[in-house]
Amino acid sequence: MLRRYIPIGGQALKVSHVLLVLGRMLLGAVFLYAAYSKLRQPSYILFAMAIHSYQLAPEWAELGLARALPWLELALGLALLSGIFLRYTAATASVLLAIFFGVMTRSYLAGQQINCGCFGIGEALSPRTLARDGALLAVSFAVTVGAFLVERQHGNSSTAISQARSAHTALE
Image (cartoon, rainbow, N blue to C red):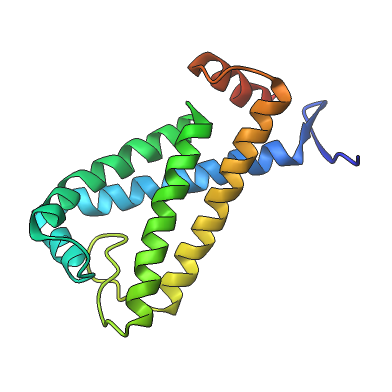
């Protein structure tokens, strides 16, 4: 099996580890920005209106989602950036992005002219937003698979210490 390495400061760093770190940093930054854009709005009602435009949930659920989702995105973003519990964090991000992508695709194909709500209000659902979210979903799946493979190669348990050790090893 051919392994590729990048020489860094006299040490060889596996390309797969670099890509894993870059992927989780990208996802973490996107989730943090998504949370920030929603939390800085003067009221969660604006985001609830974006959720309502998808016509998938009752009003009480839309209000609950509008209040909780930005905080979940914030927590996921911080966890992805730190690398703590990466297997579970990446898997959660993948499930969340798959749900977002599925709902957006359904709405676009149904011809709904709505805001996507990804980064607050004001961005229309379009092929561009679908392509962006599809690419993020692909990166998220790759990070999830990579996190499980790295853990499997190291044979470590899923504790925070072993996750931190894996992240540290990837950066050495």
